[in-house]
Every structure is written in C-alpha cells, then in structure tokens.
Image (cartoon, rainbow, N blue to C red; front, side):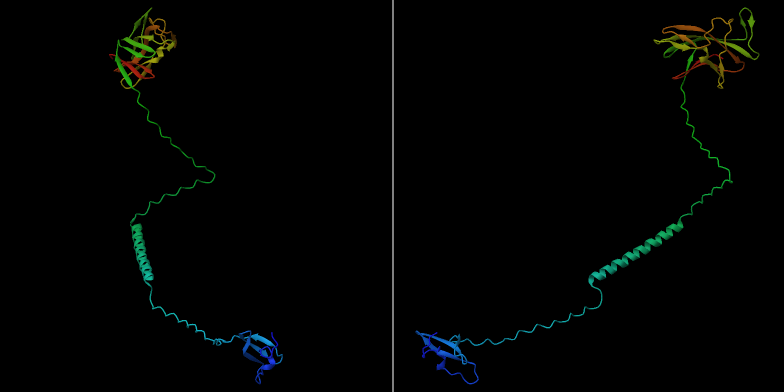
Length: 276
C-alpha cells in the first residue's frame, strides 16, 4: 500500500464519524484506477477493499408456509362394491349348504335300518370252539364212453383189442361137469390183444369187467385149469408186435340185462355190447 498523502492508504486524510468503528474511502485513485477501501479508525490501517457500486443487500424473503394438510373426508357408510359381492356369495353358499344338509338327512331316514348281525355265543370256559372249513368239491369231468359191437377191433395205443364172442352157460364140461353158484351163470368172453408199440406192454384179465345197465360191475374170476384156453388173469408182459388171445370167465347173477364188456383206458371207457 502506498503511503502517499493523496491516496486512501493514508488513513490520516479521513476522519470517521463519531460512533463508527471504520469509515470508507470510496474515491481513491492509484495509477488511474479507482478503488475503495475500509479503514479502521483505531489502527489506521486498511481492512478491506469494497466494490465501488455495491449491490443492495438482499432482503430476507419469507419462505412460503407449508400448506396445512387437509383431513381425509370420512367415507360414506355401507359396504364397498367388492364387499357387497362377497356378502351375496356367502349368503348363496350358506343357502346351498342348508339345502344339501336337509336332503341328506331326509335320504338317510328313508333307508331301511340294516339287519343286525346276531352276536356269537361265547363258548363255555375251558372249551375251544370247533371250526369247520368246508372245501368245495370240484365237479368231475365226465369220462367219454365209446361203445362197439362184438367182433370189432378197437385201437387204444399202444394196444389193439378185439372182443370176438361171448357165451353164457349154466354148466361147463371138462373132466366132469361143473356148475356156477345158484342163481348165477358162467359168462365166457373171448378176446384178443395185440401190442403195436416198440416196447413191452403189461396186460391182465383183471383189466376187463362186466357192467350192467344199473351200473353194477363184475370182476373176472381166477380160472382153474379145467377152463380151456384161459386169458392170463395176472399181469403179463406182451412183447412188441406180439398178440395174445384167450377167454375170461365171469360169474354174473341171473335177471340182469344189457350187459357190456368194459375196459378203462387213459382216453376214456370202451364197451362192447352183449346180447343179454
């Protein structure tokens, strides 16, 4: 700062007013440049520079008051549209439930009461009740029956059988006369058996029987030596291609009718019809 007496820097050239702590120099000029400054009276030194044309001090503007919030208007009384819909739906469902309950109650009363099951009688102490389990008996499958006349060959693999003739007598002459038991007759059956297989086959006179119309069966009797040309009574082996023949003797009661010679095989029952 210059100390010349012609500039504001020489604070002695200016006198402050009474009561002011500083005064302004607003018309100072230095090297052709105007400037201003503030000078404190106590120190006589320059405090600050001031603009030549100071803008007016901004006035404090009052801030706009915030609007007072308005109270929410009370809603009109009653239900909103959605509430009314829910209420109507609930009433309809309640009516349907009441109707279904009434129908179910009425239907249950209309049904007859179930028949009470009789209670089981308890067994006396110390006795165990007997449980009977009945197993159903299977119905037997009918066995086919094939009927032939005397003199007809019947093929029953591996055998072929022929019943050629039958004779019914009251006595038989051989080294003497022999008679059947009283009320019966001798029945001689002549037959032939042939083995058509490649191996041995067992045959026996006991395989043949006499059957009546009422279903009575008569077994062949053991043949004594006095009977001519007997068929093997006991089981015997018949070789492949071998044929054997003979007579089988039966003792049958008098008065029965429709007699038949019968042989049971794995394929069914074969019968030869007799004239009695």
